Image 1 (cartoon, rainbow, N blue to C red):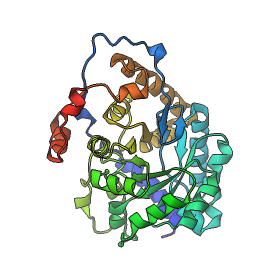
Image 2: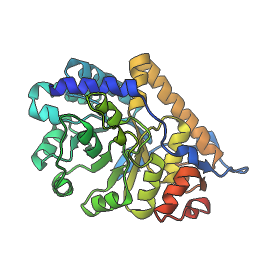
Image 3: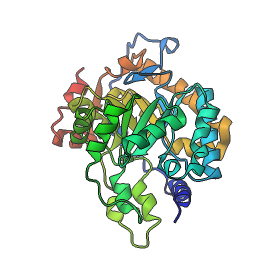
Image 4: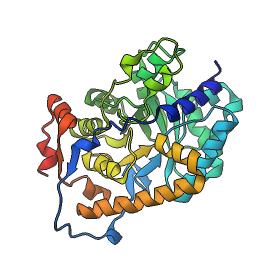
Length: 349
């Protein structure tokens, strides 16, 4: 099967399998503030990830590219939305364009459509330093995402089976590339052990890519004759991933992703310790079903509602939101307690 055909299969199956929404945020409760001393008009949504300044804590996370005209059309449309709504945008893996120059335009379109926007390049952990430079140069990118997708590769019929040396390759790229490096999981969560190794290797921004959103095991199982269904429930929830990294690797800048859709999901992500959130599958579905205006209207509503939530808890900035008290319960409390995290650091701050 061609790489382009596989890209389109991924989109089709991502839409058909949907999102589990088992991200763990239902276990995260804000402590109600009867005297928040705040106002909606005073709330500011700007944030930083590493040294990158963003006008919104929401960005359009990596989805596609390299699938011919269909993915070019999607990336062009998403770039136009990012430009109008002033969101950062990440493309899907650019390896297809590095191996086949005919696919370059499916990625380059995002910079043409959004010349002044914040754009993230994207490659897998198999990439070399030279390939990383090519990916960044292709988009005049502001940062490079390196994605980790062991489970997807294992379930993918034609996927990789050897993951040795990945950390060393990431370390070489981090020490050789001038733009910030974001290492992201792809739907199975980030443990504190992995985050610690990455930070020690020179990575400053971690996208936890938690369980609960688009499930790449289910997607790849749709392409198999013999299903590896035991990987469909594999992973660390988004909420638990953010908390683990925040509490055990505090020097990392965290991006929350994995099933995040609502303003409440976004607020809880940042209260747990994220500085921004990436949304992919949900935005793609809205864009394909409701078009440019539909997605722009949704993003505007999310921004307005996020300000309402922040006002309710007395937070006028993302930094304020990261300090409000939370109570954790259920599976998230159980997981974090078993992992040695004293959750009272959230409830009594």
